[in-house]
Amino acid sequence: MKGLLERLKEGPVVGDGSMCMTLEKRGYCRAGQWTPEAVLEYPDAVKQLLREYLRAGADVLQTPCYASSDGRLKRGRITYKTAEINEAACDLAYEVAQEGDALVCGGITPVLSYLQNKGEEAIREEFNGQLDVFIKRRNNVDFILGEFFGHIEELEICVDVMKKAKMPIACTMRIGALGDLNGVSVEECAVRMAKTGADLIGLNCLFDLNATLKTLKRMKNALDAEGITTPLMCQPLGFMCPEVEHTTNGYSGLPENPLAQDPRQVTRFEVHKFAREAYNLGARYIGGCCGMEPHHIRAIAQELAPERNRNPPVQDMCPPCGLLDRSSISTIQKKVDMEFWMKVKPGSGRPYNPPCVKVAHVNRF
Ligand SMILES: [Zn+2]
Image 1 (spheres, rainbow, N blue to C red):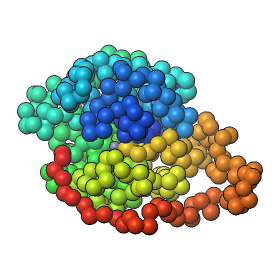
Image 2: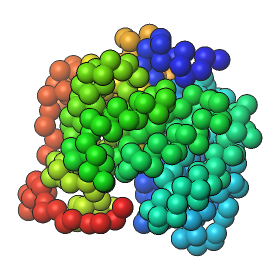
Image 3: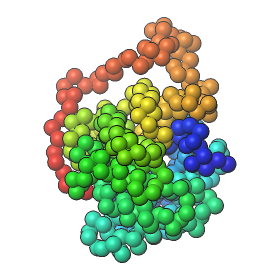
């Protein structure tokens, strides 16, 4: 089977989408904690969601173990160990990946030791605790991803720890226009990420499709100026939130975060446009984070089908506009061309709601 680096050379790689936020809606994860106990408590539910991403065209299934770090797991109802969560997450992702042609990506999360200023040794030890399972299961894990970093300094330590796995390394930051939480600019973050030696660098979570494209463009320009060719990746938020573009908290500063964001969810056609623009900006790994559901991942795979020489496995169920011409409803029968759908501006159906809200500044991170 072809590995990540080989696939990146051949064409764009499609990542998977939202896990804990989607599992919370389905009743398998606790909002606020967002810890991944579901891999042990509800393995069938986790496998089903992974399977949906595979069917949608994802080339990669990430081990569903976001926030699996001993410090963070202590907030759970029952305290599990990082190792047992990560082992179960590896097994589930590997089992489902075998049903198709997907790679397994071992996911690493920022650590509390960094936030609590416990010193570099403690930080490294906490990262090692997450990484060791992926090394032990190296026959079932194809590459590793450190994601959701708010500080470039922490990401640099993480990538250094990840090198001992001797697998391809990807890393992403949750930054927007203002750069990292220490005020390091987007441009400097991009160059420093590349200089860690990671094989793939980019952005995930917190900011919407449009904001992510703007930040991605700044990263690309900064890398070009230094002659750096490390490929870019992005796994943006599946909610529109232009009012938080110039904050460091992103969508967590919205009053309706995290339980009433539904009206902001992106449409699959917005994701089509995003995937095309991100690809044009140089992104070679495109997936999704919170709120990006299987049909959004399918839109990425469908949009980039010409570059990938293949359609998602469920293409027969959903050519770009489905089989709308066969509908028994005459108004639907006419909406068969992609152009209609790419132009449609969906209403929210809430005439008394404002289009945007006042944003609170939260110091959550
Ligand atoms: Zn996210």
